[in-house]
Length: 96
Image (cartoon, rainbow, N blue to C red; front, side):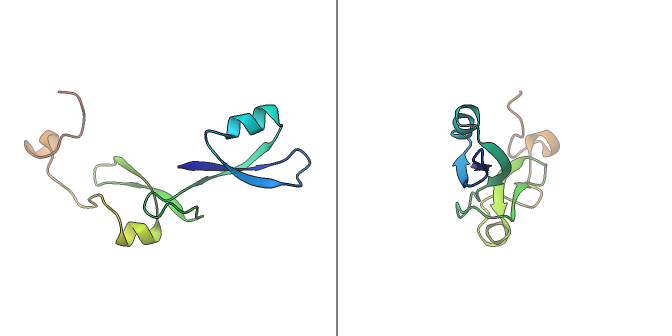
């Protein structure tokens, strides 16, 4: 999930809010967005080292920290059989 770190109008307060709440703070309370942070899909923690990960074919699998990517990653990192490339296996697209 995506979170935003925002600052109050006088920069005395800095809070972290979800993507669903950020519009209310920015629009109605005049907070400013400092930066965006993603939580890890594996451990659900907010970390600085969370990166978007992809499978072999470039399909996004979500944001994972390095530890979860190495030890707890539920998706395949290697090439796997697909209908489009091998004539059998998984379908990469919904188009028939």
